Image 1: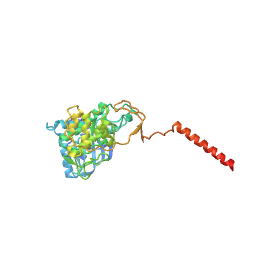
Image 2: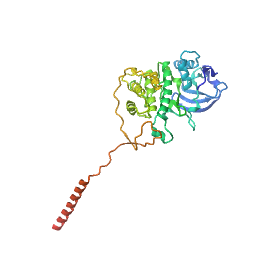
Image 3: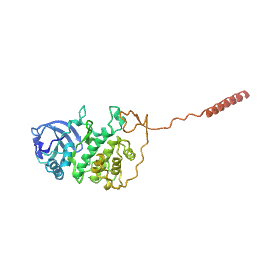
Image 4: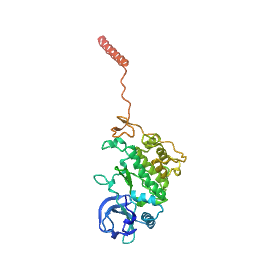
Length: 362
């Protein structure tokens, strides 16, 4: 769990020179940042990172970042439950970093806990969960439905905490969420881009809000769609949107019907403003009462063509060894019935005799 705000000795606005010599670079040219580097200054601690922006923030964006830092360092009781979730499960910004001209050149963020690391280095991204059990079975035991639910509960808990503060994250995708297979918890990064009410939309392929115009900012409805899509993909082990929708419409064992209904409402509502809140989805994931308002959904898209498998396995079969072939099923070649085989043989014999008679006549 991330330490309390009082741990950070550096001020909310920290000069770059206070960071000392920068250490290991762990990411480069990723989104809005040119580099993410360990910091090694005497007052920085061992688990802080400096996220350097590709270009300095303007004053409006700097003020937005200051509000996030102030909220993260707050010791007041107001909003404390949601703050505790965000401090424990996200890389909430610790300080805004300025250069010698007072321009905002980056921010300080906590390092994700080691529990989310891969054995060979790096972090385990949540897209590991967005695959069917047979893919897991090639390299180990697939997660059970209960474990998938636990991971989704952790993920949606972060979304609900953000929504309670009317904070828009916008950048829900596989790369920004890490997954811990030991306790199936989730950790979210890139929190310094959060904005109050509306924010810059992040147009990641495959995560587009189907009911939002490309030129409009992201809002809470955008977040509800994207967190529902990420949750549904991890819960069902399916990536294709149409396949996800049809799987939720007829949920397999291990996917609660109330959760599936809410996800369909969030993903396929005709009016984006009627999408249920993330808190309602979290309550359903926690086995609480499912409170649903009437939501008119669009017709489901056509389901993708079925793919051939050696055997059909249920969703929650452990160690499934189903082999998926990425070609459509074709009907087997037809063998002529015996009576037709005999008819063809007689016709061939007649033709041979006719040829012999013609040759003899000449």
